[in-house]
Amino acid sequence: MKHNSFQNMLMPGLATAVLLMGCAPRVTSDVMLSLPPKSVNTVMVYETNDSVPTSARPIGKVKVTDGGMTSSYDCLYANMLALAVKRTAESGGNALHIDKHKEPNAWTSTCHRIWGTMYLMPDSLANNDVVSTLQKIEDNRDKELAEMGRKKIENLEQQRKNPSDILKVSAGPAWITSETVTSERTYKSKMGYGLGAEYEHFWRWGFGLGLNYSYFGTSFDEGFDIGMHYVGPSILYSTMIGKKFRYEVGFGLGYSYYKEKDRLYNHTLTESHLGVKWLFGLEYKLADRVAIGLQVDGFSVKMDKPEDYEGDKNEFYGIKRLEPLIGLRFYL
Image 1 (cartoon, rainbow, N blue to C red):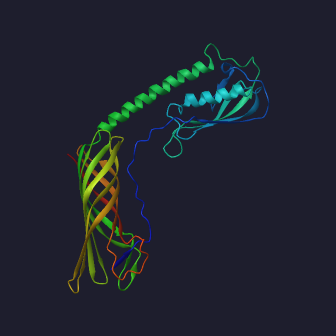
Image 2: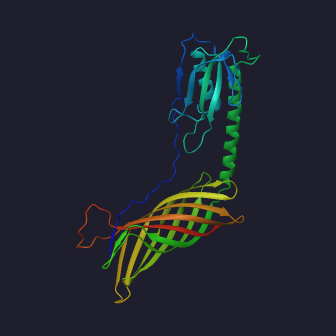
């Protein structure tokens, strides 16, 4: 039997900590009028739901967005707003209306982003009371920093709740996702079953090590069965999501043993190779020390090419598998 890969499986690595080096936010504006600059403290700020006085005259648009790898401090709403206020004053305006405000998220940007309209209004309406615009922004910055500190403490406390030692047992359907060529046909994929058992240890900061065992088995209509064992270490990252859910990713290298048995002639072929494994898991706590989880494992192992192999010598020749397994997790 020949194994010839026809697709590449995504092999995500472990999440690693990246230090943001502090590129400045990006400020762009479109000014319709040429006016002398004003003092920043004369600029009134109107939030999204506020109404600007009807006598105010729009003079342009301003946008403050992520500059790419922007530091978390510079991304604070108060700091982004300060940049918009400064551009408004430089453009000769004394009022800024926030048309749109997007909060940070994991998918698009970790920065607050602001879109606004700059206005010029009569000086009699530009009343900042006793507290200046910059003072208000500074006060808001202090509140944001305090909130960020509180959330970091909460995250650290939550991370400490991440279990340190876990025993996992899993089972479920599994697929060979690489092309399999037999004497009678070519399988684009082949379904089988998978079994798994793992022990994992995590430290408080979320990184850990694991020892993984898995077995895959399937039968072919052409009269032979295959079984694949894998055992090896893995490096892991895990974190709690709220109080009940736990998420983890991992990557490992280990020993892979392949056995192919012909049911008709009782002939057996075996091979041993280095295997590569990645995993993604999500689980839900049923009790203090028991959880149920879904884990998606991916495997890739190169096989020995037969002497009569006619394919590209540089092409991957082997087996790739995908295994979505469900099982129990025991927190030791």
